Length: 486
Image (cartoon, rainbow, N blue to C red):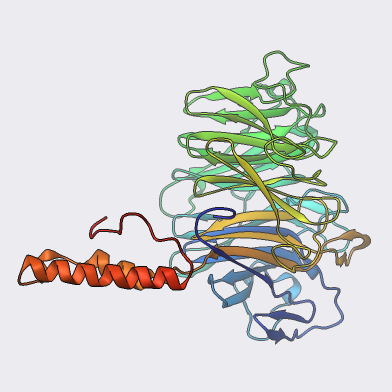
């Protein structure tokens, strides 16, 4: 883990982008189509089995996906194929050519919310809001390109008369698996949160699809809760047998509409305007990130001053409030955008971009002890500055922790907006140089020897070899040498 335990190895890489000349693993990528501005938007990172997917919207509304194998290899695939444009890179293939619609390019300053990737059993879903590339205008349809366990690709429209009659999507698309259900949640008009969901079983059969309005009961008596209109920041999270739909209202209050067999509603922060709120955390600024951490559920956000706050409930139902940066749990500097939260082993990471476009990682252990480390910009890695805002994602992948972000390359649709090339800074524990001798000791068994004395001699021999190795690498020798089976 960063800052404690075994030594770690930091690495960084630039993810291939088919609209410019880039280098992946030291090799140049040559696009078929040149002259397009290098940019990516709506970055989404998702770990699926032994692959880490970096999905994003590229030029012309193309959804691209880089599959990383965890070492130095990967494969670029184009998900949709608007106007028959793809493939855009030599060696690339179009996964779902029947998806001829394009993804909407986000407008300047818009939260990253038009693309969501989610595994569901042996399926992998790439959902996006359809719209125009250059203007960012959208017709509000949600398109879902998904592969099944056999490698067969499919496309389906989720709302507006497709799988459901859900109204147009305006923002905040979030796809989330909940048991044998798959949920497509989004923000509609009038601050309404909608959820189009599939109710398990084999194949996507129409009678298994459902539509529910989550909040805003004042305009629809059939809504699940009377949560106030949403102003943005939709975050959906599965927590045990609960599913949580969290969002911000116009006052910066975080509302959580959650289901555990029946529907519930709670206000998380801003107790100063509602004494029934769970905590006295100040108003939130634009975003909220919800993350499960063992038997805890965390609602993290930044306020207008760049302070990161975390409202969380433990397994006994007790609510807590902690400040993460600026002298709270850590001395991390002010945040200049959304905080991305990720549980990794026994640590909870709160990552954000500061005013200098450096990525700060504030991490807290189960006892409340905190530390901070700078990821890019000449600190742990030489990866370039990050763009301010929401396009930073932290993702656990096996024994690796990845910090993916966009740099400040201008968007092709707006030279004042920043989209950028994708960078990935990641770490994993360095291999134990003495692991061979540890394995030899662990594998010893008295039954493999003719006499107990022979076994003790072999055990003593391997223990001395382990000590020699530890000394050679400057590692302290434990007081008691490891014993077989421990």
